[in-house]
Length: 296
Image (cartoon, rainbow, N blue to C red; front, side):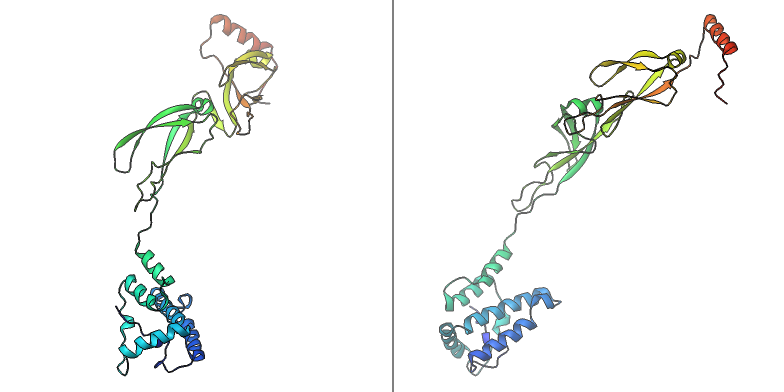
């Protein structure tokens, strides 16, 4: 067992000192070696623990009397500096218990510092593409992903109906392995909703194209248009122009609040590339009688 010279730790020459001198010495040393004001944090922290331990023994009359007997028998006229030769926490613990019979706060901290704390594994994030229809209706989907060790693994994930673009699905414990008994990290799958040929998604709005013939645009018409779940009839007013939008309320994407956005159809007026002789004749006649000139 290593004997710790508590008087020297407090900066005192010997044990011929009063209780007030011990208190004064303790305050000076505690201020000098406080970890918050020293650059060498590790050294000052250890020294600060010794200072507190020394003061706890020497400020207690009964403990000091018992300690002094040991101090006189071990040191006497020949001083030793074994207090610097620290061994493991068990030795410090046994020496301190000679005077108090219990565990010191320092000992508990020293012992616990040697234990390896459980460390949770790192989370892993990846991204998958899904269709607008899959995102709107929701579905269970099997996806194959490459794990951190390079192997392919298949996961079955449940995509909730109405998931938002950029949201993440969390698979608990499927990330990197934990250390020292810690939990595994999680796998986060970021959802990217892909636009398709028919629809594009912007927030809760769905956008699509509404293709019209020149005569439908000029005369107005009732046409059919597809939505995500059905087909609806749509009235097109006469004289509508390419680029104009027609809104179909409540037929867009889910807004996350129990409602739906709009389906917005952009008008595109299509001209036939090939005409029959009769069609050419009609267009020619229209050109002769019409006074409409879009360039003026």
